[in-house]
Length: 206
Length: 121
Image (cartoon, chains in turn red, purple):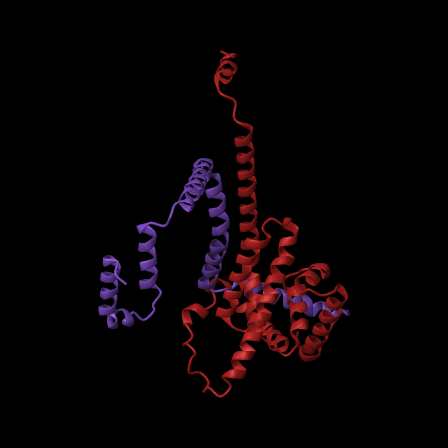
């Protein structure tokens, strides 16, 4: 009885080495795909909120995050996992800047256009917050965030990005520098100035 | 950075985290769809790559390419036949040029064909 498996395996044709290599590579590709899915699932909501705070537009923020996801998967899925987060935010950062430039140009061209004629009516269902996430005790946090958003809107884009990536996304200085495409010293300067601005406006109200 | 700034950092981060948790269901759903779209390309590439028919497909494509190259060389050595004339006719029809001149000079072309057939100059 014990020899049976050995006999059976001896009668089988040994697998081709090439097929084995292909199978191993396929497994590696599947693992990478799963890792990417976990990464994107973990980062997408925070990335959306960061894009929304930068662009101050819900639909544009969704588009920016989608584009960043596609670009990361298409161009950087082969990079080491620890590089994905700064790379993803680098792509998103560039995409946000691109959107802001286009918007500026659009506003310059259509400055004479009557306001509100091309805007769709907001969808109350879409903008309604998740009931499970808005208990009364969170009101204070929401008000604080609304004030922070209004202060951030008045900062330079570099200061705003440094604050969003460092404080909200939790990237360290080196990762933020990769994401913003600048030196670590610049990140520290931009972040400190953003914090100073927030502190001076919000003061003791926090 | 002083203590008040650190407190502002901490409180603002907590408020941000709450806002992420409170994202509308529709937005969360759209983000998940975007993720699936982004990963779809990668998945498709992997599935196609694993297909057992891939080696056979590559071999068949190579064989087809070889046949086309060989027959192409043979054809290049042959004089242009009616098939080539038909392709040229098709080019005339499809290139969008004005065909009015052919209508206007129909009598002339008929005469030219007769002359050519009769071999009289």
